[in-house]
Image 1 (tube, helix red, strand yellow):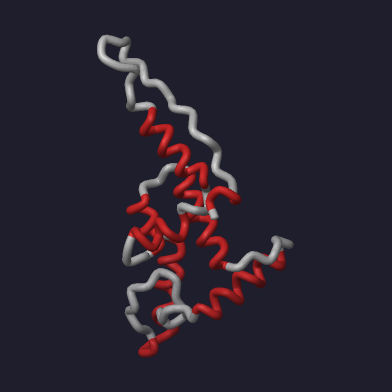
Image 2 (cartoon, helix red, strand yellow; image 1 turned 180 degrees about the horizontal axis):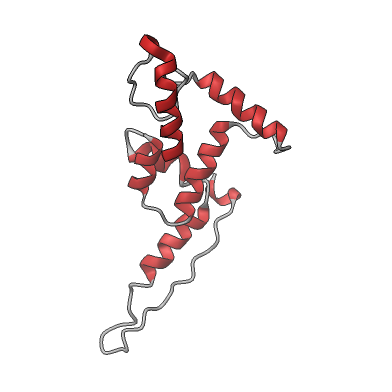
Length: 137
């Protein structure tokens, strides 16, 4: 990021009066925000050059969000990372992708339940049925 900022600072004199202090990190040579189509075109060009499969940028975003949730990242953190207005939208869109996330949450909660008064206070896990696509529709 530091070297990127240095390159931007070096571009500023060449841009002259066309330079705008946009505050964006990734910009064109005059510090204007990049057009989304330009970003997509560059991504597809680079992916093709290194022989990656054709995956849409949106699919990468969706995959990152799904993996964050599968890794146990708090829903509010995922919501803010994606820029969603509400965590409800994030939850409804992404938590159904990985039933393992719901299972892990249930197992973590069940682990807090003890075997009863006077016991050694060891947590017991409740065996949960595995959900399949047929049972979730």
